Structures are given as structure tokens and as C-alpha cells.
Length: 86
Image 1 (cartoon, rainbow, N blue to C red):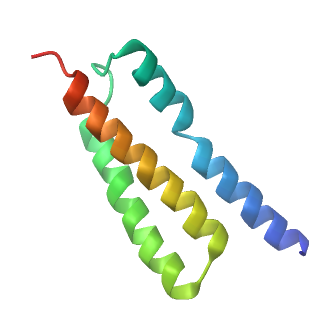
Image 2 (tube, helix red, strand yellow):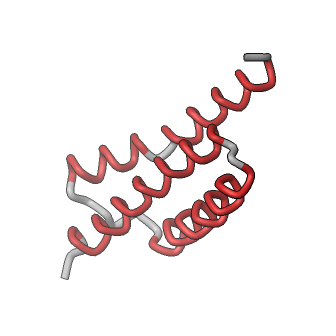
């Protein structure tokens, strides 16, 4: 593995973990008032676009990172509707 592949894997890992603290906080506190549904939907849609691109080119670091972000985005969308105060 050369240095550029290492950068790709490190960048993919860092991208994948960006939402983990937010998902954990929402899960623990059940508070979604400060979450922007628009932002989450934009991230979700951009992740789908990145996945299509990465699968077409077989870019595994990008596929793995965006699969994780996609899953975390889906969790946040679920939490947004499940924990929203009526």
C-alpha cells in the first residue's frame, strides 16, 4: 500500500466517524431539537451520489466511508422523527 492509498483510507475513516458523536448524543439524550433535517437529508443524498460514483470506479475507501455515513444519516433521520416533540 502506497502513501496515497494510506491517505485515502485515513480520510475515509475520518469521514465515516464524523457523525458518530452526533448519533451517540441523540441516542443518549433523545433530543433532536437542534438537528437540522435539511442538513441531514443533504448529507444523505450526497452520500448516495458518492456511493454510486465509488461503486462505478470500485473505490473501496470511498464505498466503505460513505456506506457508514449513509447508515448514520438514516439513523439520524429516524431519530429526528422518532424523538421529535409533538
